[in-house]
Amino acid sequence: MPAGRTKAARAAALAVAECARRTGRPPCGGELRLSGGVPVGLGMGSSTSDVIAAVRAVADGYGLRLPPDTVARLAVRAETACDPLMLDGRPVLFAQREGRVLEVLGPALPPLVVVGCVLGGGAPVDTLSLPVRPPAEAGADEVRAYERLRALLRRAVATGDVRLLGEVATASARIGQRVLAHPEFDALTAVARRVGAAGVQIAHSGAVAGLLFDPAAPGLRRRVRSSLRALDAHGIPATRTFTTTEEIPHGPAHRGGGRPARPGTARRPARLPAL
Image 1: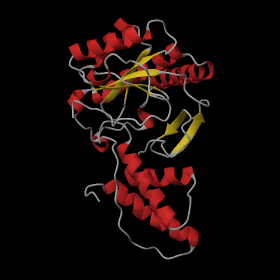
Image 2: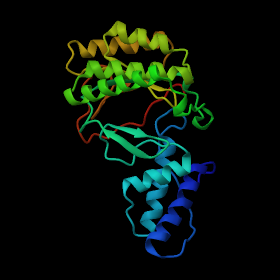
Image 3: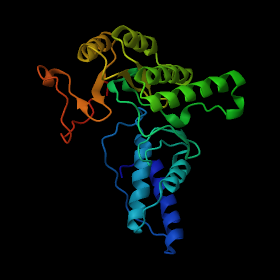
Image 4: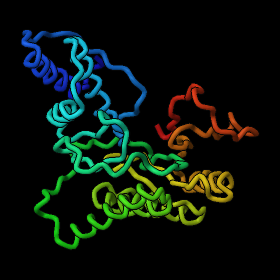
């Protein structure tokens, strides 16, 4: 429950078989109830969240704690491709259709301020219907381009270079346009240039996006306010402004404040006006 969470149901069944094998106990059935506030179909990892929760719930029922690589393997079997949410949060290059880490890029991403938004009117994306190109179809030039981006990303993480990270994220978003073709892409990148953002981020499997800022950049609050006005002018709904560690309130309820929430402050649910 709720009905329709077929990926989580498959994950639970796979986890039962895995846990029964590990413990020597017989497989057993049960009732799985899922609850959470992650919007579905926007590229925020909602299905992987469901799948991991299902696997961990079954493992807990067996008195087990499955290692992350096992959870990743079960998640891929359940949903074809998964996000690396079962890992410890370090930036990694993750083979999402194999469930394995190809490279740990560093301990953490550079500090960022993100002005979140949603494209396509917030319409969900069916990831399983997206076209998949076999690796063999990638040409030599394309492979070299990916390797260059990978090297730049590695350097950005190692040196804490927000501007370089933004360039890589924007290039990645542009590559994603080949599949999702968001009509607001040009407007979003134009806003980023106009307000001095480091770049843009767009989910490759959905419509959630964001403008990336260096928190140490001069005039940050002015840039953020300008970006919110510009997004609104282009009909792109803003969702939430946050750093990599805490939310920065904005909107009518917070006018006159403008101070980041302190650590431990309860966070409001993601506001997605387009939904």
